[in-house]
Image (cartoon, rainbow, N blue to C red; front, side, top):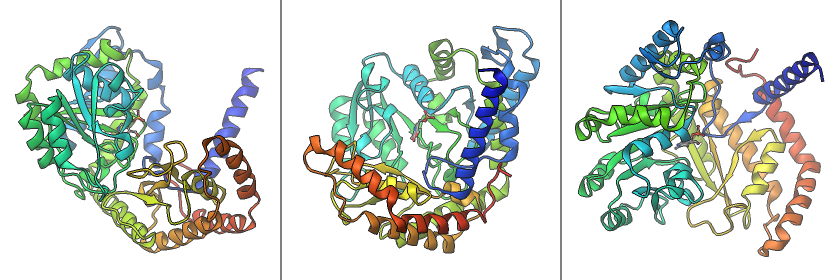
Length: 434
Ligand SMILES: Cc1ncc(COP(=O)(O)O)c(C=O)c1O
């Protein structure tokens, strides 16, 4: 294939994806729409440059401008969070968490994080993740009320004496009590690290309390509620530097040569642009609207949210309905993800819930009244899959879901809903898409 044909193909596919992003309802809570300026920086010639090392200490020449860009991004990050040290080179959230773990722990040390099945992240000690392969992972969980069980957390911490405790979530609709985490971390002299990837925008906007006064280190991805490019930042707090004055060097060495090579300078520049945007007063309004929208949507769907996301149990529609719901909603132009619910009654692969959120919709200017309409479509879609319960016998599930997908694909009511959704969504501008 000539490069011209290949390029044409790629741009045709990008146009197809732009259509999907514009005419659908993007409700995966970890996603967002970046601004045209963020896209411009991300698509810039900065991608051409190699800059292994840190500003003023690079392995290659020609980094005079790159140094200024990285220093600017670091300064903005420090200002936005009120911290003495920031790092912006991690390629994404998972390598940033790996760098923190390497900086704080020796291989085999105990790390503690919220269980995946309770809404935690893979890198906080989940099975098959580096965090449980190279470290001794202990997981705490949520109780019957779906909230973090601090009694269990304290008991586990006292028993296992973790070197590092993670406070951070990926599918948890409640606010986090950092003070309680700090108390437990102090009992066992653990380094407390907040991974606020999902809720950073809410913290900057003042909707959620900042973890900075309570924790030693903060990690955040930059592409979720913060509305920047894919990437991550690591921040050390005053408290963290007091606990370990060597931490800055340890984190630098973990990033390079520990894990990474050359930083993605186009990404660093785009992070700087998104941090400039997050420092504007309009970002506070945006953050407040994300939470307002999530709260309205949750109420309409019969549950609660104190964040940007909703974890919806579908047990009232049948057994193991998450997969069927994700597929049917996608057919109707609504993108969510299937998710386990605490105490999952079905299976991690074919779970009983869905996870959905409002950051991307809010970036398009949608408000509470729009959430009521969207909840209406979601409920209509869920009625269409009622009765399509997952077989209890594991060997029947694959064939069953193949048939269910065919059935859902042919469903006339879902096609009607899709038309309504497309007409509605198309009216809202998408930042970065003409
Ligand atoms: C809490 C949390 N930490 C870390 C990550 C990892 O980020 P990435 O997907 O950029 O590696 C995620 C991503 O979903 C997350 O939710």
